[in-house]
Image (tube, rainbow, N blue to C red; front, top):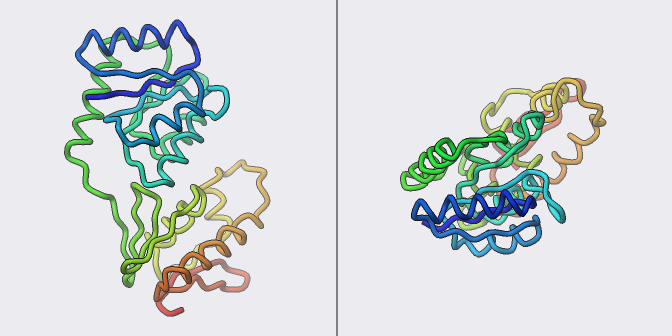
Length: 224
């Protein structure tokens, strides 16, 4: 098994590489997000260990970019104990697990083994509606042979709608579910993501539409 470790603390990076190699893993190390994205983007790794706070690109942005490219390599985040919101964001971005610092070597190895076992039994996580398929592992929406990649928030909006077809979802429900109840993000961001989704559904000639119900919200239904 080949593991990529991305950690900007050089002492910790050296320790992690030593631990992995001593336990019969092949391991490469990088110390910034730009290199992490380049290395992981090759698709040659069986697992990723990513620090959240790194120079260049943070770990969450690295993983989001990989998932948007369709790279499904299992990933474990290393987080500070105070980074609760980042842990949630990381899992939403496609991480398989997280491990708070400081951690013990046995726990790290156990979590890695569990993550890699899940990889061996991996099957795509799909949602379907009226011929449209949303791949929840690769952040892609497809219809027939046509496919469009989705941004993280676009994916979350469409995921909510495909889980609740024919049900009107209010702007407030989107905001609470995706950004949190105490967000200060302007609600107009929902319209922007809906507009982008409509263009991508049109691009794959999806036989569905997102209809706006004035004063209520949005609904996913059949028909273009």
